[in-house]
Length: 565
Image 1 (cartoon, one colour):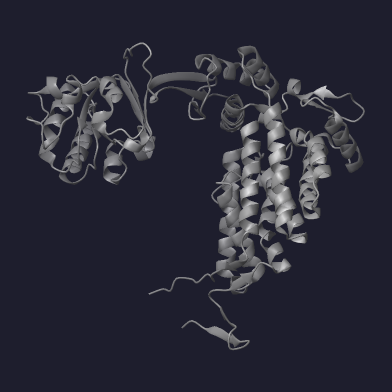
Image 2 (cartoon, one colour; image 1 turned 45 degrees about the vertical axis):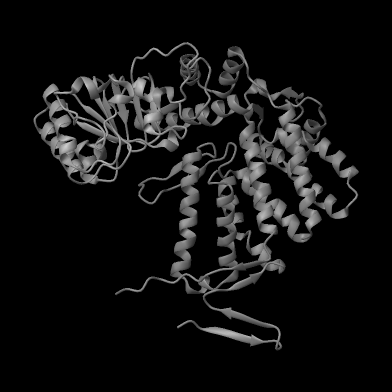
């Protein structure tokens, strides 16, 4: 039974407070600080791995701890998930935390923060959010928030206008050489870029995987990319293709292709095609516009297992066609795909159980079956390869070149380290930088914005606006100071002096990094990062603060363990 306390202040003003739905008014300064408590803990964790520092982390099922750097974004996101899970577990096992305002509000603030950043959290993101929200909490006024918004937008405009664009092969190669401490890594990245004609437009193009040799191998594939992969609604079907063990279906020989319009349930609609493919000892790719289930899927599973026992290479691979991943085109409207699959009668080769005269089989093979040269597929995506000549000027978004880099080394530990390092260099730095442009890292680009913000501060007339602008101005200095202390071991006085000299230099790429050394161009040292990552971080910070400052009431719920039967 729900217990509640009803308090009568007067006849017109009543409030209800229950143990299961605590209500918090955010005009209380203590509650506002509580919203940042879990984010502050996360900030401490992330900043212990920033720049040249490393975080010692041991996963739940790992025998030995790992050293993790903030550049390893995948492992860093795993740490964040483990941290949020630990908060949930601690609350479940501690009844006092279930009704503690600081604990509950800290979790709410953290969840709002993570949702705002879409999981792409960095040490800079937590530092920005905490510093700016702490300043706002001291002066909680709409004009303070307006000043913060104005200052961040000014920073974005200034950096956007000064970012570095790498437009030529020589410029990109120079950036690669600066970023790679090892010549071996530099050479392999350049080979990949040559294979792509230096058109690295997406982080899905290059995949860095574990190799089985002592040297690196590059595998280039060009073909049609399906954003959805093998049918994964049935475990028995996945086992028939050995997906649980191999994770991948790779067929490097000719395949038959059957395109089926509609939902496939009846076995008699597909058995003739399976029998035909089995006799030819060829795999069959079945593309359906609806679900494949019932007796039809059972027949496919039985035949896959039977052919596997008899060493027959024939397998039936089922992929569902999704218009959402094909520019909204229905199956019969996607003429590029129909041509790519080499269907003999073009649109007329799409089999429809309602309108087609014959069921696909050996007798009418010349009417229905297309062909493929090879196929690679997982449950997430599929890659089809066919040699086909496109007409001049004809373009197809699904035709894509994919590079698989197989990392080799003398030991598994070295392979894992190189995978993490090269994947970050290619997909997180070089790819993103080529798309959006590069900017100096180590907080240098933020320090360069201090002069433009100083002008904005002078022109502002509202006192609360000035407080907001000053809070952003302090952040611009502190981020570079933090990097100089971590990377070069400076004390506070030395770091402050170098930041001041850097911000006063008119060139966007010049900075003073060492004590009593001249100012130098940091792009020649490879101290760069992609502009879009910083831009996204600033945008998300504004969104998070606007969400948090627009709330005046928070209603939470007490965690309750499920009752056992």
